[in-house]
Length: 336
Image (cartoon, rainbow, N blue to C red):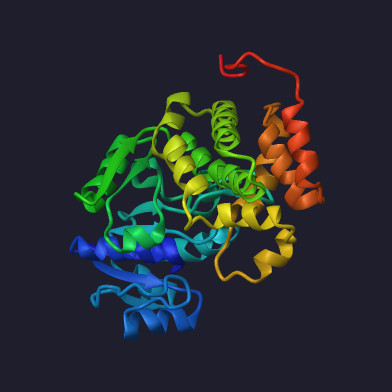
């Protein structure tokens, strides 16, 4: 099968590498000409995934129509802020029977929309029988290296998720299916915000107890928002909930955890992000998740404090004090 990967960042490159190793013909689209050239000629992505040798069968282009021509599976994986425009540009070139797999994580900050809502507007011809979402505890570098990992693929139409499972499942890349795309998307987005908070905990040196409590209460926030948006609460004990949360909040390869650690050391978050080639989605998702929580009346105190620190200049000490002196609650408050 021809697989088109639209977006050649680290995660897109890793998914394209895995798909090629599964015997598929992979063409990657990149906005950056140097990235496309490096992939096609050097079999490397020096900008976003340095040090990984890519399968020589992968081709790359900056022409979206060429990348999509004849593709049976289209993997969309640009940063969330660019998904609307890139998917709109891709729409005329996606084959009528092609399946679309979305690997982008986050909310659209301007509209507070899930990625699925964005695609309802930009890809109206792609219905749920051909649309699915993938998420889970997956560092791009480790996937590209072929190290063992698990993921979840979700669609309202189970057959669509099973199609992707058949194409991508391997002993070193186990793909589970789900019929809860809302929950899988919320988990994949909110975990980035919580990872910023976890990084700040580690940067401040407040201890393992505090980090464990933070992640546990953060998981409750994730579930409350997901349920308010129509998700199955059980999704959040799976790959896109607790699985991705553990990885992104504790792993050294996590850009969002690194952002939190830098903030704990007194670095201005905007100044830090301006020096980075890759995107720390938690910075943008904090704003969207905080706004969504207010819109739906969902209590998300950790998310609120991450937003206040990153976007409103609140000190970490004040944010931590607010969290630790909140009114005491019953543990499952807001989840019953």
